[in-house]
Image 1 (cartoon, rainbow, N blue to C red):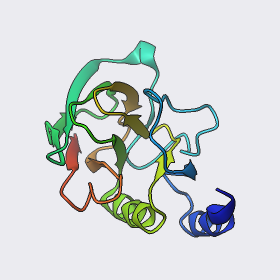
Image 2: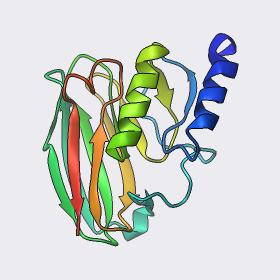
Image 3: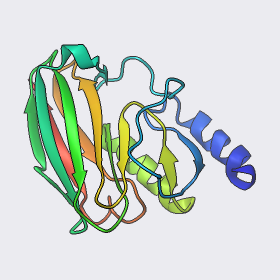
Length: 167
């Protein structure tokens, strides 16, 4: 991080408010990561906010595979729903799920590619090592079409993206 720290922070400040922040050079997580209390995702984004586990109305299981696809790749939710995503990495590569707008995901996928990949430590992102599972609780507060993608370098470009329609 020392080498990229200043450049990275400068780049991130230009993109503020950023839905996805990174904290360190890319490394394979030892296990399933939970969003940290100091995560940089603001409480409210156009695509929602971190949810409270006690308010979960629905559980959605998603498989992440080395075919660079999420299954399912299309989800529907109602405005106000709090969803627990249960992710399973069925592949042999590291994968992640990051929720955001298409523009934000494209920007951060490019940033990840330029910097050799980094781990996100935000409430709208969750990682899973090969064969591992991960969870994320999210509340959809506004209607619209939003996205989730794997921003590990090359995965997003290969089509590892899904759509969330909130009505």
